[in-house]
Length: 213
Image 1 (cartoon, one colour):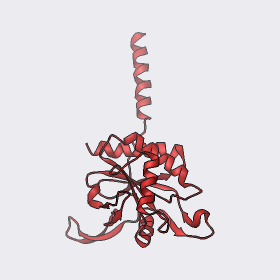
Image 2 (cartoon, rainbow, N blue to C red):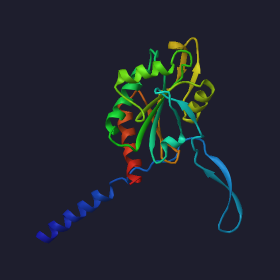
Image 3 (tube, helix red, strand yellow):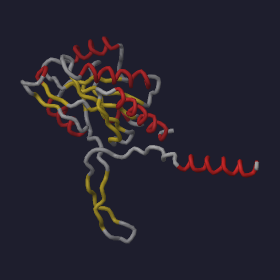
Image 4 (cartoon, rainbow, N blue to C red):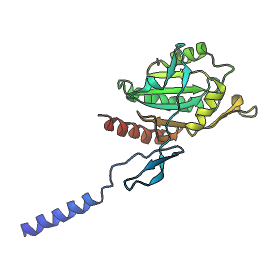
């Protein structure tokens, strides 16, 4: 009887274990490029290569230019906002602060907030904004708007950022927060106004950090 009981327990445990889903794997986001490569047979074939963030140079709240090199061997989180935004920005900033607090002691994680307001968000305004939030660079960079480059990068990061007189505050933008890995690939994104979505997003950050060990 005891042997039958142990066998039954073993079957139950095995069944439960087999139903556990595989650990989440982060894919590559963004539009891939096609590159010609030679395969094992010596044939030239077109291969999809994951999107890589192009070179950038932005001025942050400390009047320091930041570039891709500042994020080598780091993963970073990106959002788009403006300080006078009356709509979704405060909600997004609240969620960015959660991410900041969660990973503030891990030097492998950084944040970049791109202002889309090239008229009002000067370096000094961004500095005051960062100070009001109690955050500093190089952990969290607030970068001013070079209009053409910023709006182009919004598209790279699967966001929208445009001037629109009819939009609240004069600018229209989407509220996605984006995760970039150490190689410049887009790996995850989430609705920056949703607590639940950002909870999942932070788990994605943890997954990337584990791969960096």
